[in-house]
Length: 389
Figure 1 (cartoon, one colour):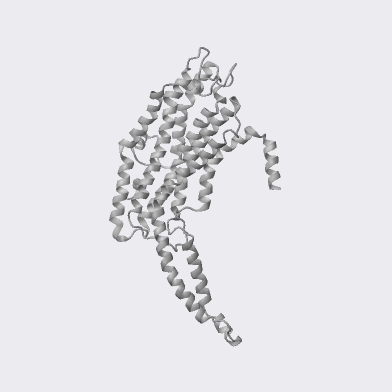
Figure 2 (cartoon, helix red, strand yellow):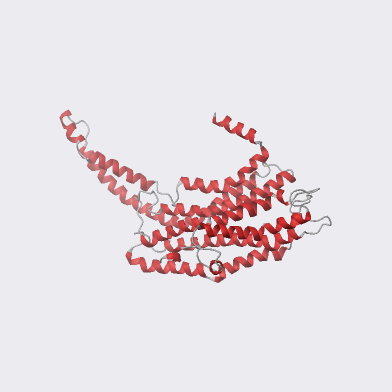
């Protein structure tokens, strides 16, 4: 169980192929090179075709490629984010899996079952079928619906359609090469999220040795919230895609941000819920641990409070005050109250409020440039300073 055995991403047919081609290796430098290769395959041919057609920077009518914000955000922002954030995310997720394997969360009698569960997840990671299905789905979307990129914005001519109303070579490359590659990277990330969910489900079945009084406030599972944050890259990437699509609609179709408010709000809630959904598998376990701990500590608290009241009766003579103040009973009861408050506030999902805020910001930050289409920079700064002043 060393090396890449606890990794969710360093495995599978795609990883083995890239490793044999010496395109990847340990560290973030390989991710940078892989990002460059994907940009060369997805965006550079589009720019070359459009440069030959004269639709790269400006056109006599319609939308040139470098002002098609849906394409720019998808391949220059979303795709690099998915690739460049993978190594760091994999390291944190691997540390979380190692926490289960080498900590006291699993009893010694269940270590064999834990190794079996981790082995099953590793077999799923290395299987050929899941990533093959991702590839088929990525290509199937292009072959099923056909290249219909010309009508993305009704009534707006663009670089994807020539003067005769036919799709350009750049549009065909986008539809049959660039989009399948982007979809495949996104689907592989979704598969890793599903694999992580399977790992959590198998770990829950190991009868974890959890303690509601753990200082992390999550019965010893607080590290899972930090690990779950790494999948917010899906919200970040999809936010870039939506930002580009919404910017096109606002610039070329005259739509307002107010008219898109329901789509934006729905995306923020749905993307954040998707990231948090796997942690709900732990809710029954944490609720059971909290319920049992409250019952035990309630009984212990009654005895502690009774003893305290007997030692600290009302109406003491002044001469006995110093003896009572030197007694450790008050400090012990205060410590017990703190522990009981930790148990009482134990959440059903092991994630902190700041992790929730960061997951929400991953989805919201890519959409923030839309504000610049509503307000100028000076007006936006004036409004912000006015609120802070």
